[in-house]
Structure formats: structure tokens, C-alpha cells
Length: 315
Ligand SMILES: O=P(O)(O)OC[C@H]1O[C@H](O)[C@H](O)[C@@H](O)[C@@H]1O
Image (tube, rainbow, N blue to C red; front, side, top):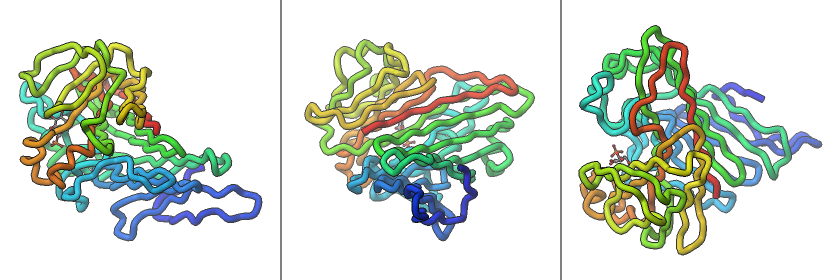
């Protein structure tokens, strides 16, 4: 079932029909919220198609968003799930993207809400998918000037009772090839970074961005004891879950589809202190970024080709 936006959907109370997810557009048309009949919810800003909230049925927030994050479209959101495209970081040596701002323009562009799809099943396994679109036609002039390729992107955010999925399809609609990188920069909320272990990256090669981009091999689980900024290419492949545990208990499991890399980022004390919109300053204790993407090297898209990638985070 596909509905158009701007039409708040009342919780279906028709006798005989199970309650359906509720999807609403905010009055100022800046964000979309979806709530499952069982209480789980998400909130997505059209600015960047940034997921800024994901709550379980008890109302516990699963994503970390800085208290100083700008949610008014003046700066990429510090937290939630900013979408990185078409460049990860900056790429001074890659002519086609060298002019772009850090992490590209997807996270600072206004996306269109294309509509929702809901499952027709019972309330216990209801799900909702929100689709967002960005293309060279809707991109602002500044970004278009810096990256003059013809493309379209559809980003889908799917909420189920126990998972959040995000997936992107980028199509080269033009007549010249382009190279790009894509990444879902997920800030997971945790209770205490010192208790966190990340598994699923054992024996994987990684680029250590805090140690002169040296290429290293992970031995054992990842623990965070200082500034951490690593691009892993998991040896186990995308379907092997990357699991975040706290005090020995698994809290998040991230499975990737066609995204070969995983960035693990925590700014720790000094870096967090230097990030203006990072608050509170000790908030790094309550977050870990596990970022699914294809960012080591480039994905080349010939005219007509598409790049598809997705992650599913289960709790
Ligand atoms: O400050 P931002 O542009 O949002 O980037 C935040 C972080 O993103 C990724 O995790 C990169 O690996 C880091 O190097 C970067 O510091």
C-alpha cells in the first residue's frame, strides 16, 4: 500500500482490520514520523533524509543525537544517521569529488518524501517503510555546480518491531560514468563506552585514520579506549553481523547488504571537545558510530548503472 505524503494517516480503527502504522508529516513539512501499532517509532528529517530518532516500544531512544545538533537545516545533523554521499570525508586527490564538502552533499540536501508502504499483517509484526528521493533535478545549484552528474537516489527507512533498516539505490541517469562512495553514519546510543565490545570484525583489515592511515589487522573484539576512527573491510563479508555488546550483552546487531566496509568512530575526549555541535562534551561515552558503507576505494557507475546498499540494525 503506498500513500502520498502530507496526509496524516489515522490509526485504522475499522472493525476487523488490524491497526496500521501511523505516518505523519510535521506542520512545517520538515520531518516525517512513523509509529507502529506496538509503539516503536522513527523520525526522519527531510534535511539530509537524516533519521534523528528510533525508539523501541518502551520509548527508549536507540540513536545518539547531540544536544547541540542543528535540526533546522543549517548544518549536517550531529547524530542520528547522516547519509554520506558521494564522498566519504574529503578526497583531495579524486578530481571529480575534490571540491565537495566533507562527506558530500546528501546529508545537507533537502530530500523529497516519496511516500510510505506499510505491511498488511497483524499489529505484532507490522512494519513501515518511508521512501525519500534526491536527484540532480532537486539538488541545489551549489551542489550541482560542484558535482555536475545526472543521478537519482532513493533512500528507504524501514521500521519493524525489532529493527531499523536503511537502504539506498543510486542510479547514474546521465551519459557519463561517475565514481562515488556511500555510507550510513549511524550514531548508536549506548550506556557506557568503556563496557562496549564490537565483534564481527575479527581478523579484518582496517585503515587506522588516527594512526597515519596505516593498514592494520584487527585481532579479537574491538574495544574503545581513546579516539577511534577506523575503516574496516570485514573479512567475514557483509552478511556476518557486526555486534555491539555492553557488559557482555548484545545490544545491536548490524547486517549489511552489498556494503563492504564498516567505519567505527568515537571521538573521545579531545576530539569531542573540539566539535562545536557535540554536546554534552562527555556524550562520547554514550555513543558509538558503526557506519555501514562502501568507502574504501570507489564504486564506478556507468550510465544506467545503479549502486544498491543497505543495513539492518536489530535490537
Ligand atoms: O564531523 P563530521 O564531518 O560529521 O565527521 C565525523 C566523522 O565521520 C566519520 O566517522 C569519519 O571517519 C571521521 O573521520 C569523522 O570525524
